[in-house]
Image (cartoon, rainbow, N blue to C red; front, side):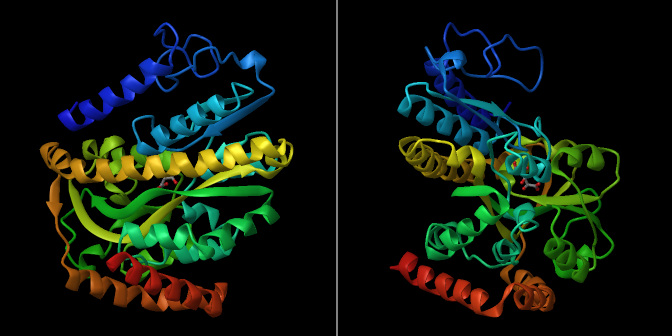
Amino acid sequence: MKKTLLTSAFSFALVAGLTACGGEETDENGSASEGEGTETEETEGNDAADATYTIEAGIGLNNEHPQYKGLLEFKEIVEEETDGDIHVKTYHSSQLGDDREMMESLQLNTQEVTIPSTAPVANFVEEFTVFDFPFLFPNEQVADEVLDGEIGDQLLDKLEDEEMVGLAYWENGFRDLTNSKRPVESAEDFEGLTLRTMENDLHLDAFSELGANPTPMAFGELFTAMQQGTVDGQENPLATIYLESFYEVQDYYSDTHHVYSPFVFLMSKQFYDGLPDEYQTIVEDAAVEAGEFQREQNREANEELLADLEEEGMEITEVSDEDRAEMAEIVQPVIDEYAEEIGTDFVDKVYQAIEEAEENVEE
Ligand code: KDG
């Protein structure tokens, strides 16, 4: 393990130390755990049996990812604020299924929380597609302002029609490309690459427009698909590429930053409506507060991990602004098509909000 990861692992362990009782490794349901995938904390004195409410919260990424650290932060805040009357069980690495399956479980109220990227959420509420428009957000600060503002709230409200409640936006990050064939510097280098994408039509059409052969796939199947050569490459933020050890099965990394991917903190509407008002406020505030913590963790990780990726032997290609502009031009017809579909008035409002946020951020 690298120093950077070591330090974060250490801080992670420290937090764990503070909340675990007796240091015994247990799974979050309180019983002794066997082997990979089910590890970490039980808040002191927070015996599940006493809890009136239990939240089963699942994500696709692993327990090293800032997304999981954010989820543990949410757990700590909620259990503290309710004095253990809400117990939060946390699951990572697609233990409860892929993004679509977990969202369907929320609709059925067989699971209470999941935090997918906006791309799979767009299959439930198509207006979320706008957040996956390539090259939409110039930086994280502008994205925060728009997502945490009127536009972001407007889309969260639409989730209620899908039996889900959107409580906050967290950060997946700017997505970059990796592959096992060749360095990708410009648009023409995409030609013929078989690429895994998230289950989202805009992503599929945009990569087809660039000349690649995209194939939609759940995150949990991605590592094996790269290992077996079913796909040549994929695209995810740096933290995911490093913390999911993609460098073991990929040789080339290009900082395309082609899409800024937000996460959406989702809760089952039936579960949320069943909570007393006071607890509804606690889970809302906890999702926002833990989200701020998660964004910080994510940005810290992204700052540190490029050097680590190079040390693991990946060839790093820095894509020029000119080449990004060429990629943006090539996919613009696809963006226009989806803008028509989800409503140009709304899309114009999003672009306007980005312009205003850019001015605010620059000030
Ligand atoms: O937990 C979130 C993941 O399931 C997924 O959304 C991550 O960016 C992602 C991807 O590429 O599937």
